[in-house]
Length: 219
Image (cartoon, rainbow, N blue to C red; front, side, top):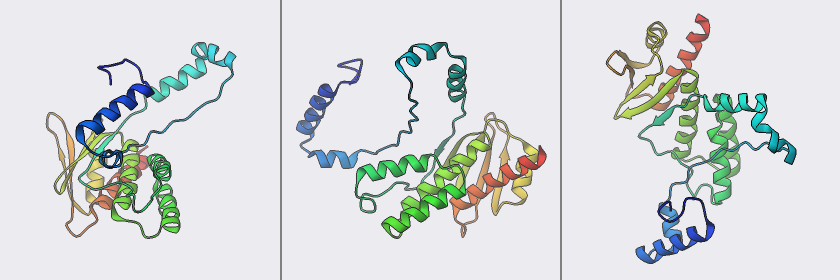
């Protein structure tokens, strides 16, 4: 759309969508089925008209903005199906609400709370939803470990921390159910290979939880 306008425009979006329907010969439903939906988490703060004019100069507001902007990020790219199937939760508004809640998972209590609620409401949980919940927990724990990214190559997970604490990762290795190596290359990372008979996602998450545990003990 940036080739036609610099800002969002509902009418332009509608025209472009109609053009896609014409060019592809597909129905709107067929096109929608091809689109992967990603959740967006927004936290709105209500202020008065006077407040809107003053907040750019407010030190507390500016400090809060700076804190959010400096918040670390962690990308988790794994070879797992992780989504909420339409057959499981039929209404898109409910799926989006669940995606937003899942994105806010901070600990296993949060994960189990959503898991139990979804089972009670929608029935037995498909594997892609279980994966989605576990990956959200992995990402939350990875942020606590100051990890920049986690990627997967077959049976190997590559954990790239902001800084490698060799002592703590060595302690984690001793308690890990599988193979773990510290790779001190130009871009150091932790190589993690869970045992074949283990649940790989749970093993990866346990390794991260152990890191958090040992880090707390060393403080």
